[in-house]
Image 1 (tube, helix red, strand yellow):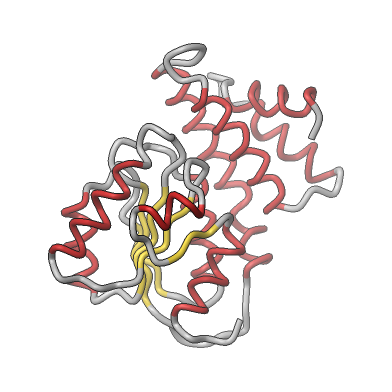
Image 2: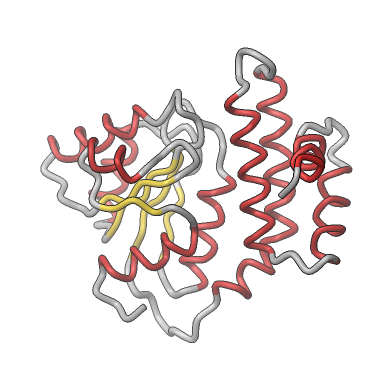
Length: 215
């Protein structure tokens, strides 16, 4: 994606009237861009805004970009479901998913949830800004097969370590997958997560691997 394309994404995400995002998606899809590729582009835009937080962008911009990202996901959801659909019947397992405390971004998490649901998994989405106690409670009460944690901002990824530590201190041995724009494979290893997923497709693959399902 060139500089002009990146600028278009930023402009669409920061549009307070929430009009440009729809036009941007329609234009890109008319050019043959898949829903998943569009999500990657939008996520890149959110990462750019997040990287400039407190310097170029502030709370208002983060909030507006979040609104527009959510609107984009609403438009893309049926296409993502088609791309992630499987012929599986019944549930393959239960996944608790959420964005960690301090982080209000959820486009990546939503995409993973949609694609896992389409692949036959039961998804319990705790939403955004989720604390460690809520994660532990949900995993325990639901008897989740997997916990998936997301973080987009580097300022919030550290809380993932607190979630992992808290669950283990509670005797909860559920496999934990981490992902999001702020997360790397090295970081996942350092905090004791079981798996790192680089994107939604990889997330579905890792969940199936963890539950010993055919990919």
